[in-house]
Image (cartoon, rainbow, N blue to C red):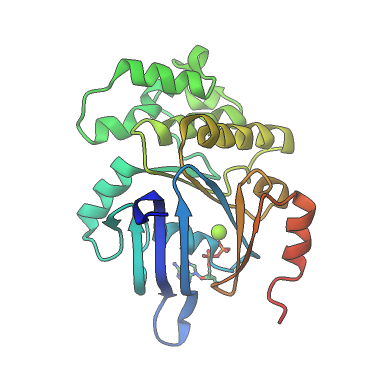
Length: 245
Ligand code: ADP
Ligand code: MG
């Protein structure tokens, strides 16, 4: 396997939040690599470092030490301006709270990353992405007139518009009922299977994690094993024993 086939690599990544007596070591020497075209779920109890992990990978947060590579590009140790461009051009984000702009239509929310980069909007690309997430008919609506699941699909379309090297999702189904959440997870699965996207998803829900190819576990900021193609029951079982010696 050549290095180039990894979408993301972390080498001894640590992150300390805060300073002085309030210091928290949220990540403690994490080394991991994720192949292109795979769907990985990151699981662990609340406070285990999942969001910090994703934020360090995606350039939203800077590791205190260690190295993060996105393909052949080092994410760690870049300036704020460089990170802003890297996130905009090469990473798609999906959050629990959708983070759509209420004043913009579906189509304008989806093309926002393109317009922020001051690039022309490719109408064909927009049409294709809207079709992929099943929102063609709703392209002129505003988010307030969409269901939660539809809003999350807008966020996924926005994440895809720039053909990112990586899609990062932090609890993408956290605000959805189980059926709608299932639709969103099936869509993330489809991005990997049909479009060859690489997806890294943080979740605390074993049913959500079971949609991934691989589940990696975090406990107290450290990797605590992984499971390949597990079912939800296996994941739940592992979760109950996390952190045990
Ligand atoms: P998770 O997403 O698994 O719940 P987080 O990565 O959010 O975990 O947090 C890991 C640890 O780091 C927790 O103890 C949390 O309180 C702490 N932490 C996270 N972000 C900050 C921050 N900005 N400042 C101080 N502590 C933080
Ligand atoms: Mg979190």
